[in-house]
Length: 348
Ligand code: PEP
Ligand code: MN
Image: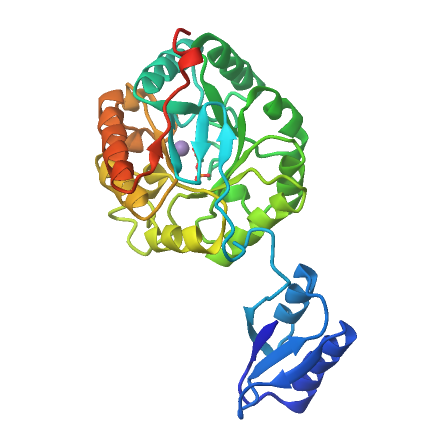
C-alpha cells in the first residue's frame, strides 16, 4: 500500500499513522526525502485498512491500495463485467437502451409507450412507481398501484422493467416486479437502502448523487457489492453545476471515461436528467456513448405537457428512434454491440 502523507506533518500525527500501520501488521519505509510517500508492506492488505488510513488526519491520499483492492476496482487485466437484466446487457462490449416515462401514471399509456420504445430497440422499460421528489407537494408516484401497472406492462409487452426503490421496506415488493432495481440520485448515499437492495438478488442501477464525487459514487456501489451482488450498473445523470439557467445538471462525461478505466462495472448515461430539456437529450446521449457508456436511459413521453413529472425533458418516440440510430452507429465504430430486444419475445 502506498500513502501520501500531508507535508510537514506534526510528530503526533505521523506517530498515529505509523502506529496504525504497525497495529495492522505492516512494515513501513519512506520513499522520498520529504517523508511524504510512505510504503507499507508485509501484511495482507484489506479494504478496511484503506479506510482506516483514509480516516487519519495525517494521510492526504491512499495512492495505491495494493492488495487492499475494493470490490469495484478493476484488477489489472480483469475483464469488464456484463450485467444482464431482462433482454438488456450492459458492459463487456455490449450496450443497451432503456427508455420510458419518468413516472408510471396510467396503465394504458405505459403499455403504449412500452410497445413503442421496444419497437425502437429499448430492451428495458423505465418508469417510477415511487418518485423521489424534491418537494413533498409534488406528485409522489402511484406506489403499489404503479407496481401493479408495471407487472401488467411486463407481462403484456414482454419487456423487462427497471424501477426505483426508495424505502428499504419496499425492496421486496419492488423486486417482485422489477428486472432491475434503481437507486435514485437522492438515495445514492443511503447505506441501509443500498444493503437491502444489494441483497434482493436483482441487478441494480445505481444513479450518481448530484453532489457526489466519483469516489463517493463508487463507495455507494461498494455497499451493494459488499452484499455479494455483483450485478451493479453505474449511472451518470449529471451533477449540479453553477449554470442551471441552461441545463438542469452538468453531464460529467469525464467521470464516464474515468469510470470505464477505474472499475469493471458497466456505466450508463442518463442524458434526460442531465439536460432537463428535450432538445439536448440527443446530443448528450451521443456524448455519453462516445465517452464509453454501456447504455443510455432516456425519458420518453408522447404528450410531455401531460406528464406529472419531468415533462420538459421527455422526448418523443420519433426522437428516441434517432437516439437509437446514433447509438447504434457510434457503437459500431468501436465494434461494440447494440443489444436489441430478444427474438423470443418479438411476438409479444
Ligand atoms: C428518475 O430516474 O426519474 C430520477 C428521479 O432520476 P434521478 O434519481 O437521477 O434524479
Ligand atoms: Mn425523471
